[in-house]
Image (cartoon, rainbow, N blue to C red; front, side):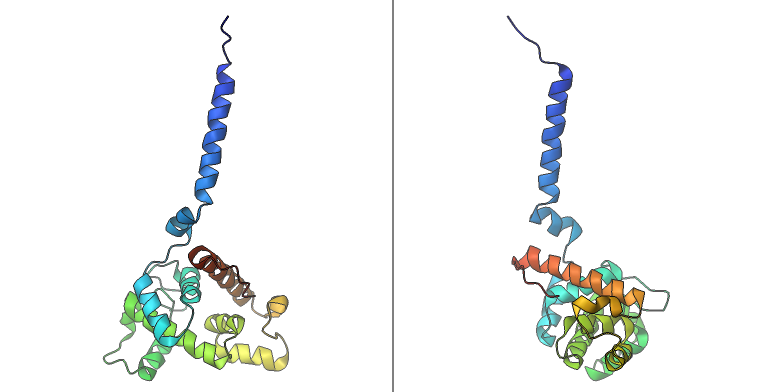
Length: 196
């Protein structure tokens, strides 16, 4: 005697198997690297972070949060390119690193933008003794504001007191960059170091 299984039961099993396969795929490092946390401009990022001595995954996280890797991005305040560099900052950086024939339109060029952005991150690392939270806050709000917060005791530069950052935009920015940085490090190096 042959017993027919209900068609609904078979469809439910197929649906369950497909759902499990999809969940496994979207949680796989390969999928996350290719779709959610890619490293476009990898060669340039690793080259300039190597020159300036900063973590390439931190620079990548800054770029992801700043422009989501859109080389033509421009903010309402005038920041340009992948790492959203203000023209004045670009001019200052170009003078410091002795770039010839610099002009602000070069901030839309990925190579030039990454070069200047990584140099600026290195300057902030030096200025804030390598404290990544202070560096990232300064990248967003400016080093003068961050120094003021430190001097007045508004914020002490620790993750545990991040709620004390006076600017909501900067507070959210620091959280996003550090979160993305940790994901990049985990995906690409296997490191589970907590950088907070």
